[in-house]
Length: 249
Image 1: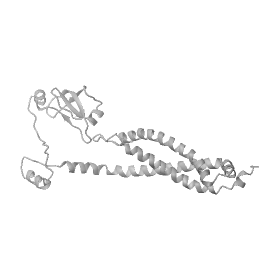
Image 2: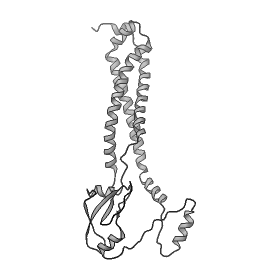
Image 3: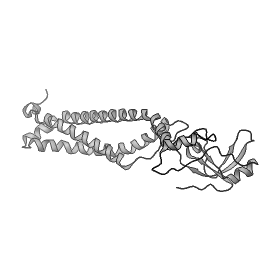
Image 4: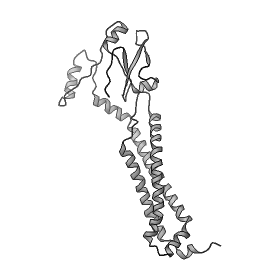
């Protein structure tokens, strides 16, 4: 959404609005060096992921502070085939410029500063996957152990190994699907909590989850369930019908 800075109001960035608990229509007090505090009406909130900014029209600035704004920063849109190093050298040789930075360099620096989060995310995914496998295996194993006499009876009635396994698999699959549905809903809440907890004051993380994250989570859980069922299939084949049907003294 494009926002236009209108006369009589300012636009602030989203993280600044969140920190100050402000919204469109509220009033913000701004204190510039060498000037008294001034109040401005917030005309909009813009999305910005790094640092805080306040946008005001030049006419409003002059009207409020009694002087024209001093421009100490310029944004330059270069053509795709422009040599950045050569362009930088030309500007630096001019005494009117104190420094120059490219958007790609700033983006790269920001990404490098949050690279450590990637390792944490991977660790969480691996741990969550291991936990899911252990839980699925233990639940299925307990289910088989408690119903070993029932399973032995089914075998005596003439069920093949594949049919016996399918009988147990259906219950495991239902439990897995229910777990996926509940887990996806709880995961969205957990994701939001992790994001807002790991943010610092100068950074805003994207709170939106892409659709394929849900699909990938569901597929990984189904894959773990398939592996568990495959392992337990061999355990079902080893059940001794005679021993299992003996009465417990």
